[in-house]
Image (cartoon, rainbow, N blue to C red):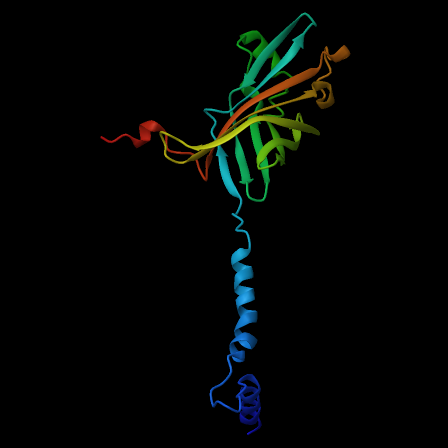
Length: 230
């Protein structure tokens, strides 16, 4: 009985009846619907944030290149031909991360003698450390990635190495019809910090990085030959 009485009181308080009319007042709609409408409008007005998206490095279009002084009289240039990894990207939240693995033995100067010497114990020591890794978080300038605050692990030593992203763009790939992003990044470090101290005096150990990278959303597409029909 009390519950029925309480509901009757609520009904009477909510519907105000004027002496001249037996119809309930519209006040009920203001009292009960207005707060709910405010909540609904607030939810609609909230910005929609997309979840972070994964991009897989395309090894056929990603090459960490470098340049280094040679005896102070010239500059030698080379690249690593085997790399893999992932980039997570959330443009709405202006955040992301980078995780890259590079095969140390894939160094290529375009000179067989230099390639052989570069993987020996005094240098990359590729037999003991077959891979180097780079991991970090993206920096943004407005809505665009502008750099990476990361760490390079080389020869078992981890040191901070920052990258500047010089260009960045995402498109729908014209051949594979799926999202792909590309960037050009640069940075530098001293190889002596990673134990490669031979001939590193007077700035001779400075390594400048120039990295071209492309990555596909979610996963790499099938190779062209795999998509051909019989």
